[in-house]
Length: 275
Image (cartoon, rainbow, N blue to C red):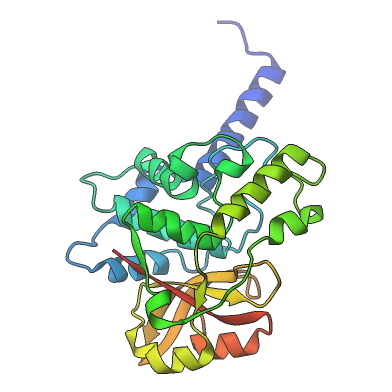
């Protein structure tokens, strides 16, 4: 048998390295099994917390969803605040399957992340958390408790279209920019609510471990700054999140109210109950 050329062996080695790296980033059937096992008998909120704890210590990774061409990206080697919440919710849902695998998880992520569960360009992805809550409610996955617990906060949501210089996808692309503006116009049909710090003090005992929370923004045109998972520890209402400050997934060492008061751009809170 003739010897393989040296360049062929190098190519084979590089292919193995890149394939292994891609599998690590995107996960595997075995990883999905590990993250979703032994959840029988737990409530939806308990499942959210258990899965989130299994991801503690994963690095904070920003801008992982951006690419030249829109396609499903499911990084499992690190998270930002949004992808952590979305991933934990998707895992909690496929955990009810008999033998959940990577394909099940990716399908669930597609349904959660994209309007009508279809990938069709940049604006088929749901970019604002406020719209994501409506979408997740329509899927029957969550109930938005914010209108019940909080106060109305009229505000236009148009940060993306009014700050196009920050978004490479439509910085110079007028078609996508106009699609973004149309996406934002649709959100004007919904009333925006939040829990102010005063509301939070009044109803904090109604927030449960495993609820999805989002910290509302006082920045013009922006709905929320940060997302997390509520977590009660020793009687205190804390949260699990992908921290840009600590560069990893952590259980916060401060309460939700302390965090709102410390971060000047935070104004209040949204609360979603996982169903």
